[in-house]
Length: 470
Image (cartoon, rainbow, N blue to C red):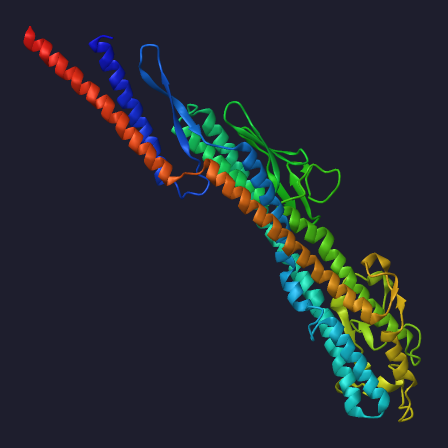
């Protein structure tokens, strides 16, 4: 090899070493940046011995990426359900909580039992009224907390749709930038890193299918097939707050609906599970409890004429089967037992329709009221507590059922979180930056730089010797 050729080879080695050094330095500088993948310079030696940088490669494991994002979606689904039910679970109380609905019903029954032993005692009549009010407050609070959960969840859906729409818009912009950026360069791999971060963000909101194109861009689809990003084109997302539907363009992708082209995992899927399944079912349960109390105490009250409300009312009115939805929030006590409202406490003994006091020791009506809570009665089987049971078991059943929903969501979220953490750790090991490895790379770079520099120095000395000999 001639001197000129040797110069050329050494210079190419120094240039390649410089690029290698720059890339290694970037790896070290970005080691703690979330979503940054390790970059490796690709070198090639030509037939003449020149060293050339042919590109930059991202150390990416597509299989781990896919598994991590799937678990991220699953965790987000269950976490959204758990978070949505947290406040309601607090109001509802645990099965052993002395302030839960079951305990309030038990206290109401006990107050009636005490009144049956001394029917004319006005203090005991007042106690029955107070326990009735406590039970009504418990049902009203449960209804209010469910409505609060519904409103909070709907607001979170709006926020999440905006966040996801922004992420999809950014992915489409990055696709466009990649198309005009030379491939296999530090710039193009940096853009792909940002796409990866955006895909992680999207996967937490909605499980998606990702197709990596040959030109470096990505296409994004809902798992049901609806297209969300195609190159530089983004399909805008829209949440119809009135109908409670989610759209990608004109395509309905509402999670949880069989046959639609959406996704059933991710934070949005968890929110729609709450809005369309869990919260309506839980509302039906407490509405059914309110209905049973109104109808049961009305039917048991021998003093009432047809269409007249009993002890428990629908906002002061008799029960109307056409107005069943939201009944728990409207449950109230009949004004007929409030002395301050022109009523009489002794109606707890004689019935809501009584116009004059009955005998002081009369217990027939009190016992009839007690039987409402003790005797098995018909319930709507669609609420999931059987079609015939007593009031105590029904109340305990809905508390247990509603608490179990959140407990199950917590357990599933934890399991998915642990799985995502394990996969994420493997992903980080495979494509993250290991400082020790990069420092070793710097030592190799130093050696390569020194070798090329020594060659250049030797060539210079040879040239000087030749020139002196002329």
